[in-house]
Amino acid sequence: MKNGGSNPPAPGNRCAGPPGGLSCRPGGFVFYYARMLLPLAATGVALGAWAYGTYEPNSSLFGRAIGRGSPAQRVAYLTFDDGPNPGATEPILATLGAHGVPAAFFMVGEHVRRFPAIARRVAELGHDVGNHTLRHKKLHLLGPSRIREELEGAHEIIAELTGRAPRTFRAPHGYRNPFVTRATRRLGYTVFGWTFGVWDSDSRVSAEEIRARVRRKLKPGAIVLLHDGDGYDPNGDRRRTADALPGIIEDARGRGYVFRPLAELIA
Ligand SMILES: [Zn+2]
Image 1 (cartoon, helix red, strand yellow):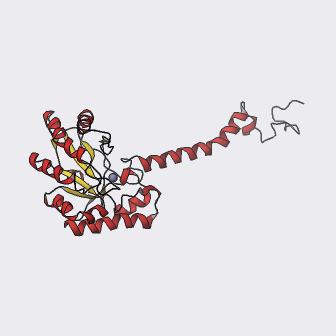
Image 2: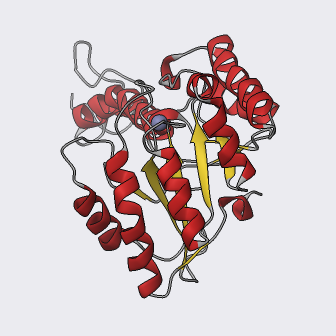
């Protein structure tokens, strides 16, 4: 008897499932394997999304992070991470002052403790002061209590030694997880990413090259990531960034850009 119509399947027939069942359709094995692989694919998508939330500094997966201002105007925002630093922060402040340019400084708590006078000067000159953790830890693999310690420890030191409580946060390397979001919410922070960096922390990149890279990458609304310090070495050399800054400002203004304070993007 043929196995068709409403007849029950013959014993031993590989089409032994319920009539019309998955393995009895044309290409049944394809469906079977697809059913096996779909959960794996879903897991892959979930891992991909998690990686995106973790490593993409402007991702909103773990809470909003502002990565750019309005693209409709020729405005730009200068941000400096990993300071304060004895060799670079002061000359950067001098250049900003001479040109009347505002900037934001995302400070490392331990560096603020080491160089409180430089940190205080940043605040006194009216620049934005942000939190960049206590010890510049990569946060994405840390749990809730270590993350709170990194953020709240830096918050207390910065508030006490600069006289200004930070309202903004940027994660070291942009790495985040859901516990980071919880800690930033508790502190009432706005989280920032960046539009582009120029690898100015690489010692092989000259001041001229730093300037040229900013010139090439600048676009309306850009939040520019630069470094006035080294996240790990409190005396790390960032003078090349300081040397590049006058040219960066000159190039941008020559193209009609206006530098604005990052605080205006706070929600
Ligand atoms: Zn950093």
